[in-house]
Image (tube, rainbow, N blue to C red):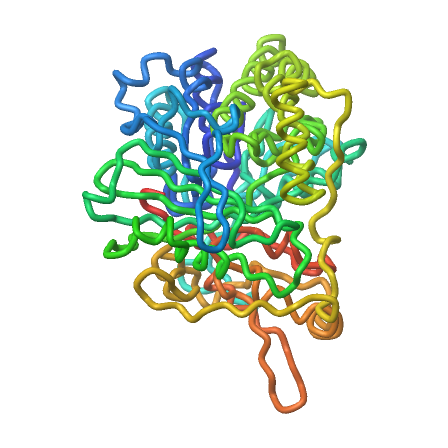
Length: 535
């Protein structure tokens, strides 16, 4: 028999948005019962970000965070913005939206672990290792979620230690799964939440954490770059953050609307580190960790309807990232707080109506104003790097975010050109010191899935990977996956797609970029995937 647990509010995902919502609910009333489900083995295990934190939402949520030991240990002291050619770095004025005065370089995973302790101190129940596999619908209203069934092998047979799924029921359910959440995507379809908004557009962010020589370390330095190794028609850029203990976080973000199917985001990131202005920081250093995650880039135009009967989308499950700032923690936290306040009002009034106060409060908040001001920055780069920089300058310095136009976004999977129309890209072999291969990188992410569990990467049609993706695009899934999950295996004159699901770091790029939308990412067994430490 399926076990049932009941709460006033169920929150799916222990990231900044979900934990902020939980904390705010208990701050408003200690009588509201709240539980948070987290698919990672622990809070923070699946959290990956740059990360430069703007503490605005934190100041509102926990004003005495310094006294409570929040892990904001590195204040940002300097911003640099570079344009890279193949051999040179040209320093440009830092755009206003990339100024970091008053911000902090953090490990977002450690920050979420700290938020979890604050939530638990208020009486929130947090269940790591429990993925929400489905939502419960009663009378066309979300009434909670079902957790995954643990202990069935890929043939559906029970293994030792088998546990059936549980019903976690709530008067309201908040979905805070992060970018491209699997249940959030299904909720958008079921309740038509994307009607009237632009398609969401995404980037793939790939990050490494390094320990560098003390002489090469500058505490609090933040550097961003555009240009090489991207061509002028492909959106991309880097970040380099100097945090405590001689550690440097380095990463690269590439828009998943890139056109050349031969492009390999992982290899472009490795190539970036070889630039004469970049490599010196890392030579002689030690790579500590690796990870990858898709990020929302659509901004205001791509936000779906936020509410549905019985719940709401918060954080990156909806898409609150400010892509111009390359920051979303503060906006995601605030979205969770606004949703919590709307739930409190309804519960206080004994109402189970839709949470209309949440989107109304969002439109009056600083989050809406912030996203509105930068709404044209990312889609302006659809016209290329130089046009994008020019349009961003006009929007920022002349119209100050109030241009009389709003650019549209497009779906990333529609942008690939056929392989016959594009040039192959010759990537250098890794040297094992500065540049690396994907499999050794995945090892550093501590990724693990039991090999006999059902694969969480599904194909709608088995023939499409060879008949269409390979035939027309030279199987781009071999390259856009930063974990080497997808592999074309040739046996004589035949070819087939092999899915190495145990390597998956849960970045969701395949679910986004597959040109036929044939790959579907579903919830794996609890505790599987990466186990990021200080990422």
